[in-house]
Amino acid sequence: MPWSEKVLQQFQAVPVLPLLLQDQYHRPFNKLLHTLFPVDSDFTVSPQFLMPLAEESADFIVMFEILVQNRPVLVLQLKDLRDLQFISSRQTAHQQIRRHMGDIAEAGLCPIRTLYGIIAMGTRMCFYHVDARDPHPCIVPVALSRHPTRINNPAPEEWWDCDVLKADGEARLREVVDEIMEACTELVADD
Image (cartoon, rainbow, N blue to C red; front, top):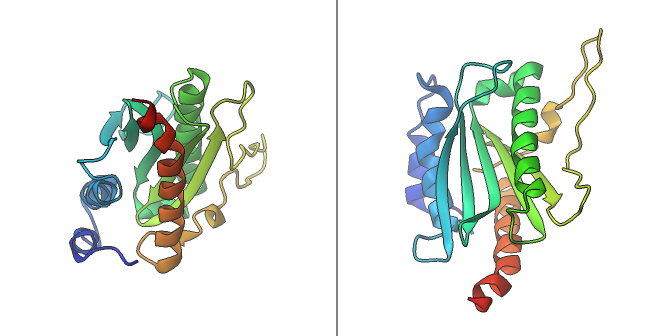
């Protein structure tokens, strides 16, 4: 089922050359997430603006956490589409979401077995997941080692293999949301 006209209008309103980079995608993804996780449901869409570590860029990390019972089940990190072309930007985004998801899993904060993550660079998405109950969790896609002297690609552009505005991207995102909702039905029933 295609996105509603109201959601598409928000994405179409993003300027071709935005001044505030990933901030331009905050509104359309906010609208989209509230469509997928309505305000009258058991889910809460919580915007997060995190400070980067000293070795990272000066940009804030813009992300959303989808919560059920005030515990995260999905993390969506926003980056500018232009970041997709740079190895260093993809690697930084990859490290940021892995660190955030790892903290959530390690602290036992995710109430369902699988914690999901997405990095959206513009409208292109890379999907992540981790078994939050595994004592030695492995976040997928896995961390690729950076070569100490050669240029390599620790977060290949191919990982961003679908666009949220195209049928395959919409289907993939809806599949993740359906899996989350299915896993959360038992939690909500227990309340």
